[in-house]
Length: 235
Image (cartoon, rainbow, N blue to C red; front, top):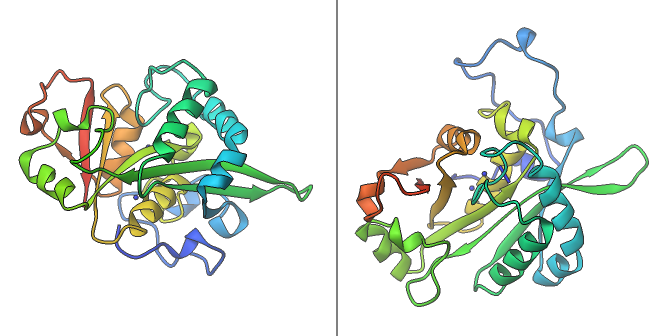
């Protein structure tokens, strides 16, 4: 998911292990592979615009790393985008200028003591008075136009994580992609989350549905059912 829920997850920062048990629809723990808990893994934190600027090179490398899978599996916005890290950095630099822009990163400490960037997610409010994001207006039903006019529509623009993260343990509270998008929306209380997912990106689509997002019919926003993206909203 190159693929934001009420209370902020306890695992977004160092703290106690998650309290949620294994959901009934998932295999029993004895049959699951062993995975590290968030407390021994990545910690999520926001970056200022200046920090994003300073780490643009790292973010470009992260994009290249998380987009190096097969077509239809690489990105929340456009899995067919093969222009590379430079195009991603240009796109991110443009999005940074939007009011209310927020970017979260996940970092892990290696045995050597080095801190490395492992994932990121970012978004921004969508307003009627201003440039639309990714042709979003083509997909929005009338009621969401009113939400945008009130300043309560927040676009989750991108979630960059490894493929295994966006396809495994989706229902776990500590799943890194889930934590990122959840934290991003939690930081904008009262806002409705909205995102576009390429129709070929089945991994991201399934992940978002597992996290409580809803897919709105294409015709509801005036877009054809053959439009290249699906519109999802949360809650």
